Image 1 (cartoon, rainbow, N blue to C red):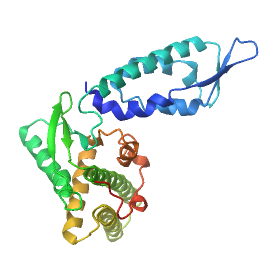
Image 2: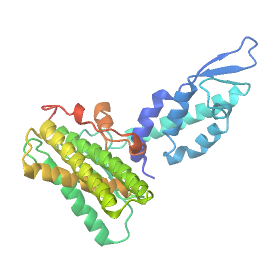
Image 3: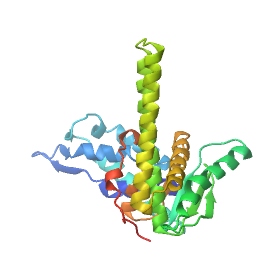
Image 4: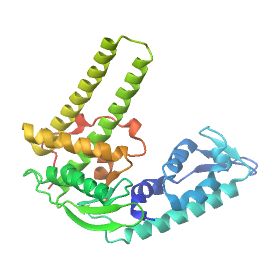
Length: 296
């Protein structure tokens, strides 16, 4: 079990585990409000394996028996007891995470590799990560360098120091763009599959497929140019090519179940990486990437 994998979810959930409540006039019932926000917080914790038993208990209470934002129940003590147990467990997990020497380093990435069965596959992932992470951050505008400082059991997990905050921000931008491309790719595939059901002529179908491919190329170009102009301050063809390759590799990594996250406590940097559990909601951040927005 790798607790560091859950640090982001636990960090975000801890302050949000509050249910507003008040007793009715006869004190026999309790009314909970703002329940929708609470439910959403609990959903964000479902990936945290050690919490699954207590989350299952909570989901059997009146809080989850309806979809309304207000819930009235006569069994409030059950809800309170389970919630107290949940908060206690989250506090313990957070204490264990914060005690790790790896947690909180400003330049550290958590890299979870997809499952693999052979050394050849491991070697390929290693080469891909070199192209996707190490090569882009060695740009003179970033001055980063890769230093693998640890690994973990369970899933194959690497802890990779990049040397500068600017390097972490660049990888965040690449990961975000890769997630956007993954979403657009899925949408394009769905559109093509729908077109195939319309019994179009081959020429028309080929035109649709080519148009989708062109759109995806344009999206990749736009994302790469935005990163180059905003974080590197130059956009020569070689730089754009390297960024597009990085985005392509990380898109494939995400497709296979891999992910890259920061270990810093900085909320702004945490938010600059995509939420891998809600990739269908991601939108391009091109407008937010402003030239000179770097911190070495």
